[in-house]
Length: 252
Image 1 (cartoon, rainbow, N blue to C red):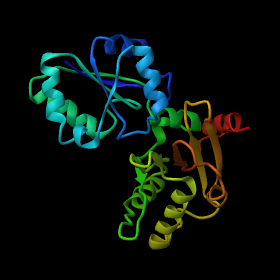
Image 2 (cartoon, rainbow, N blue to C red; image 1 turned 180 degrees about the vertical axis):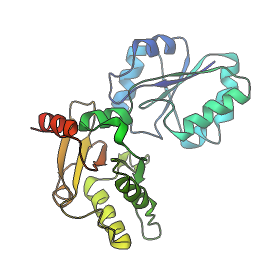
Image 3 (cartoon, rainbow, N blue to C red; image 1 turned 120 degrees about the vertical axis):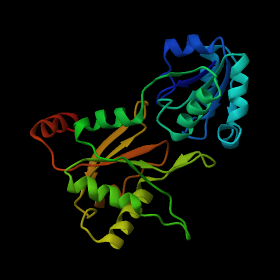
């Protein structure tokens, strides 16, 4: 059987249910789709009591058939940051296993999607489509994320912005890089969505001891000195009275 095991957002987020399942499995971990450092892998190996093998990107994608075939004759568990069925890579693996007649079970855990929204104080039901701010290069400058933000704003919906993650460098886009990309996209579209006084939530290392929740403006966010770990951004639409009250309490 194949188990896709969510390990949450921080080192000790793994559930007792997940630990019990993993004790009887051949263990792998996906460090490609989310940031999981060596210390966290060592901790997981110690609490589970088994060695954990890291899967490469090619093993997770092109080599997924081999993982599924292993699960045909033994219990195999893949540890996945956050919740196991949020990333397309894991949904494809789940679907492929089902098609090949291999039993598969997802063990759910905390996700940045729900955690970040909760930490912001905003109403979950008022969020529009999620988008990712990519890392630009000389020949790669996609701006479709701006269209998503603009559409959300027109519908009076909040926008959750994920920051591009580089698994090789093991870091996500920095805050000032993300803000710079947002401003360059604004220069292209000129719809007035991203201006200096635009409010923005910066939620850094959510669920970790080093967590920081900041409500600021675009102009001030550029000067934030946050370089370690991972962050997500939220661009709020207009706030309801309840949201204003909750935010005033949480960000006092």
